[in-house]
Length: 174
Image (cartoon, rainbow, N blue to C red; front, side, top):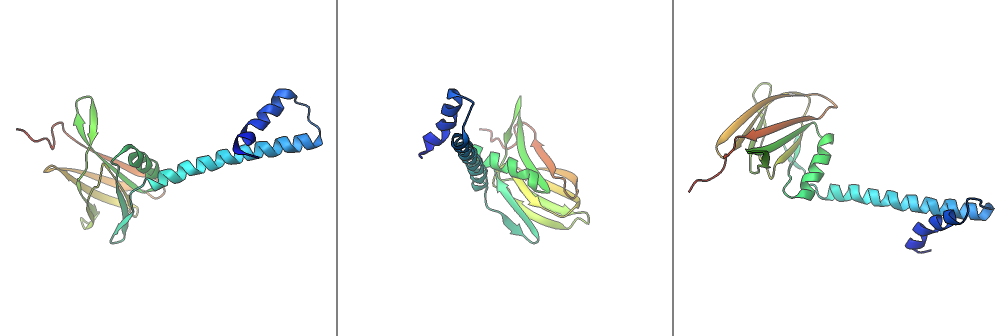
């Protein structure tokens, strides 16, 4: 049986009659199972494709992190993945009615005792980090302007922190 027949045969049977005899019913159920299986495989491929669009995971000390989000596919993949990471950072610049993503942000993540645990330059508007539960101070510097946020990461609950620089940050005047 070819692929199109697998998808159209159950429709054909249903258009003819809803009374099936033994072998016809088995064939109908078998074709329905094939169609559902194909749909599940296609959904699995979509999830795998999203995972393939993720940038690589890096390690600094005991902290795993990934950073990126340039382009729609990578941005979508990271936003979806962020629900599985303890800490998600997002960087943007205010632009009148909306915000533009910011990249190349210098990020320093310090623990409650002010010891730096992660120092990295973002490869895009997102940074995900696997950190232990606790209190952290995050400093994010873009175009010479530093924003700071104190956060508490709790076990089993993703923490999202947004850094929004004022309009005009990073623009060069001529």
